[in-house]
Length: 180
Image 1 (cartoon, rainbow, N blue to C red):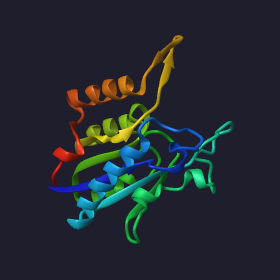
Image 2: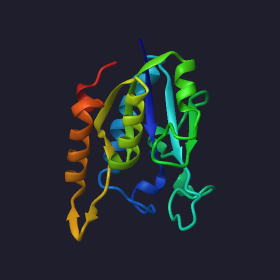
Image 3: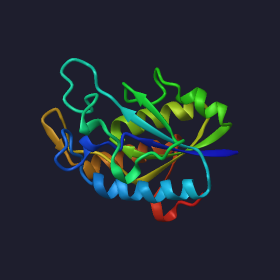
Image 4: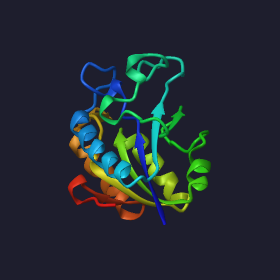
């Protein structure tokens, strides 16, 4: 069984002074950096997912802006795979599945941003493609949301989506509990 790390959308626009600041993005990126170090030390595959927004009306992750760049805490090294995406699901219209198969990967570890969008969509797609999945909860982040006039705090969004994923789609751990 081969394991790979998938780092989803840890990009500058999600940090302080970015166009779509998330709650706890810096702390999540610091934990993602710890997980990334483990994978690099073990010489296991690392895939950086970079979201680019090209749809009319987009205001963050715009191509060729500082905001769309991968954050310094998890900057790719030469030789690490970087895959651009245009949808929340990192498998949709990308080479991710083919790349993972070419590396004989069967188990995926996820860190990254927008737990209720890109993490959720990608983990579910990965499980549907028969990968064993682990999400590092404290290496992910989200934001406050609103539904039907009701405010939902980021901590509640985070907890609900991680709980949903943990039911069938993924094992959910914290950085301190994760070992390769």
